[in-house]
Length: 502
Ligand code: HEM
Image (cartoon, rainbow, N blue to C red; front, top):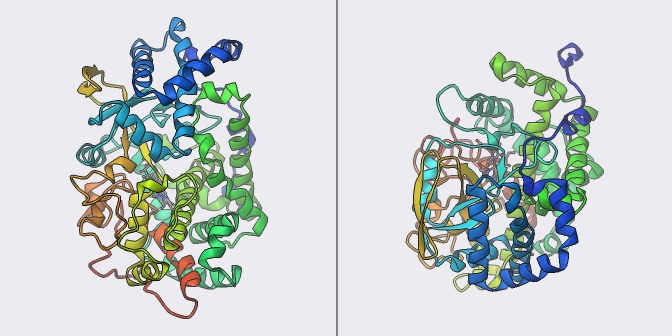
């Protein structure tokens, strides 16, 4: 078996490769000037982060800079803009949802607002159209050029375009699915049965209160569960602790290179270490063969060299989307079940008027666990938005003026706002897992649960069933240790549509 690990390579070498392209605004010269002019930057930033029309004005200059290709003479605007965004985030309880709601309002509550280096789509119809289409993608995150290859691997799946029938995205996604995520397969169902036992043993006295009190332990349990379902190993407590970094470092992934450098690459170094430590767990359990075989499935032109590069890319999405996303969902669900809200969520953005006691919440969960989680995530999506790229020029109104955005401009689709579009969701703030339009929520990158969802939405999250199975397994133990609540069936009932290959 070991012979197939040839050309495995070194993860340290991969994360330390030469940097990808970035503009003048992210140069060290820009960082030094940003520090030297800190008082002015802070002052302008503080005003911009509180006063909507100043915010809109600063954003318009940033937009101009982006349209000019971020030239040397425009780098100053990024310094105060960085503090503007930070101030607005803090002013909105550190909640990204709160920030987006505020930004949309600052831009007149239209279809789009500007943030970072791109436009952000706010309505359900626009986000839905993007999700159904072939999307251009690139190394960009939060509508900002992503720091690669240090903060993100350059060719991670979410950065690959799904355009044409021979795309790299298609082959990687299909290999990922075949290797790890065949939901209906016997191996998956066997692991799910074993998972119930592991979870019950791991945290014997888990209750909902314990979950919200000891969030780190909940995150470790999610990390162990996702790792087990995908790779078949129940990892040790300290290894799970490493993997929770994919959730706890969430705020570092969103910072562009300028901000990363401004804080002396503290965030980048932390994430680099996380990537290295994650691959070390794979190496410790001698799971390299899985990735070697997966690499061999790929057409020669798309194979990774060395193989550890593929392992890093896959573990990145498993960590970032899989562990981070599922942890976030469990944190929200455990809080909502106790009729309270999780950290970093503006309490005024949800109403529990229809389920106003823990008893009603638990009954709703027991009736339909998947629907319960779907509604939690509609209200508080673990992945709030994603970055697509305009394939052709687009005319759009921002604030009071009409602009044309050239093909190639980042267009973020904002799932957290689309999931609250009042034209689709009746009383969008009201928590109601029985709502008729529940499956229209775009949380898992498409209307998960609608007929033919995986055909309609090419990039629908491949881990959607896994995330729900893991969460249901954990919550079943917490909610009622004896009672059996319906788990993900191998042959799903009509209410839970059948899984299918992407
Ligand atoms: C509640 C939990 C989860 C939510 C809400 C969620 C949501 C999403 C969303 C919105 C995307 C699109 C991101 C983008 O295109 O930039 C995505 C992509 C992805 N997710 Fe999930 N996810 C969850 C759990 C998981 C799990 C458990 C796994 C696997 C272990 C997973 C694997 C992936 C992968 C591989 C992609 C990239 C798909 C592609 O680009 O084609 N996710 N997910």
